[in-house]
Length: 243
Image (cartoon, rainbow, N blue to C red; front, side, top):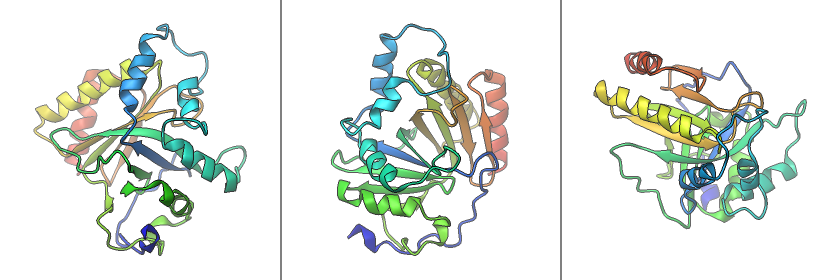
């Protein structure tokens, strides 16, 4: 049973986000091509800046109970039991897709899914639908790394290396994908390969249309989508040097 997981990763030290007390659950549905669907929607959408910072209907619809994305089942379970604090829920649940250059992901079974829990950057793979209530309970733990839910299990691991979290939506996917290419080029030029790119549809906060988080386990940085290639190169070299 999945609920036999207990007490893994007790020695991990995480720098807690100073910008937010929220925890994020990035849900990766291996049966749902998130980026491909975003790009297809983008083709049919006028190329204008959104008037507000709220997610598009595409992003919101993935949380709907009749969505084809597994994230909808997380949302249904979580919002039944969670209580907002000043209008904000402590756990943000977002549909995502992960890309690891030069790596073949062995956890891509279409009948199972993966979750990345942030800021702890814990990855749980091979999750079945029946496990979702238990995973929600784990995510709601105040001190996740001290939880008795974890133990040595091949499905639980720390997301190592440098991790780039790319928040985007239908209207910003083109810009975010360009930034991904810039980051990938700069890492390649610096001969660094241990990078994970996590694409997330939705917003980090409600007052911005997209953003980027970089985390190397020791330091994190939040960037706007409006950065230059030169700035990307500076951030890449900084995060490599501080690994």
